[in-house]
Amino acid sequence: MKITFAEQADAEIAVFVIDEGGKLPESAKALDEASGGLLTEALEQERFTGKSGQQTYAVLPKSASARRAVLIGGGKPKDRDARAQEKIGALLAKSQGGSGYKSLALHVDDAEFAARAAIGAELASYRFDEYFTKQKPEDKPSLEAFTVVCPDEGAAKAAWAPLDAAAAGTRLARDLMNQPPNILFPAAFADRIKELEKHGLEVEILGEKEMEKLGMGSLLGVGQGSVKESKLGIMKWMGGAKDDAPVALVGKGVCFDTGGISLKPGPSMEDMRGDMGGAAAVTGAMLALAKRKAKANVVGLVGLVENMPDGNAIRPGDILTSASGQTIEVQNTDAEGRLVLADVLWYAQKHFKPKSIVDLATLTGAIVISLGHHHAGLFTDNDAMAEGLTKAGLAEGERVWRLPLGSEYDSLLKSKFADMRNIGGRAAGSITAAQFLKRFVNEGQEWAHLDIAGVAWVDGEKSPLDPSWASGFGPRLLDRWIADNYEG
Image (tube, rainbow, N blue to C red; front, side, top):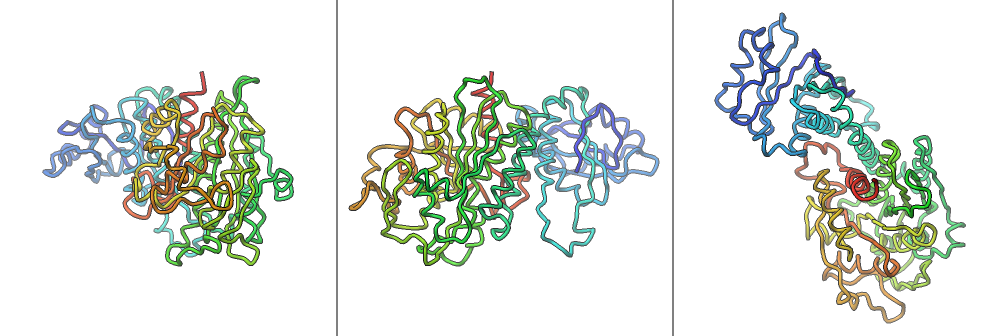
């Protein structure tokens, strides 16, 4: 679906936003008169009050410039924030996408509203249907053109451009997560990363031999039970000052997680195609930064592995030596994401000396119990990073909630045989996972961990912007955080 902006436009579907308890806007009056008052009649329907998201329709005569008029509730103007504006565009894309009509024009009164409504429509129109072979025409959307009409077309386009770049990152993250694991294994993921070079990113891929030389035994241990080679993907966007230290984004990329020898239960194991959600978020964020030519230096690093129960797989009781030199007793092979991140965090600090690091991972089921499917868990000792990430999440609808860290949790990670064990037990599972990662972060390094296990995919009630199994959580949050905190 193509999205455009205009100061005037005709389309088969004409849409007007009605404030709660409000009247027809000026932009609707000409069409109302041409249709003999059909829009006024629709507005006066007893159950339509203009509450946010409500819709009512009018079929127009052939003499009118449109075939259908839609009135959509905008709620109270004081409550119409960015999320509400995006929701209006999303609801229209969903409700009118299969209407049989090809073009829609949404009339709004300001540029920011126009940009946000367009983003909502774009994200809501996402489809992942490349593996369907028998879809009928009526199963596919008919809407091809979504035009947002506002008084200042130029300002709308300017407001739209950075949002569109971030949305491209979201779409890429969704595409990566939705791919089946027989198609998107570590090497295939690495190939998708290489494709981003056409957007100006510098990309380097390390294989197992290179990682062995670096001593990355923790990451390699996770993948040693798979016939698929583990990879480390490195993406660089250097849009800032030449001597500025970069920001590092680190993602867990377990392309499929059986749990290894500590095998997961069968039901819903297919969802573990999404256990690379952190890597997908980082990859999408790097695309977003490149597309809008961000004035910041950012490095994205993703550890790509597959966790399988082969005869060569790591066992409970094995001791791995990480690249940092610290030893880890594996007590549960299904706590593998932290083993991957441990070595990628080391690599990020060793080779790039970043000013700050954010890692993202579908790390623990415990975070779903804590926060459900509406917030990612945020762990950091740095108040400024916590504040910045929280504000960015609220601004772009990818919310985070801060949870504690503390040395009192470290006793849960004590091992009888190594520097630490990789699980802390049932109590405070998300916190002990974060405490584990903290051991691989240098003293004084600015660092935050985002546990996105509850928000990377959602099977139940979803936002209208989120029509896919994979949400694509992360790129909009990271892009906004970098824009607000690391660009002048």
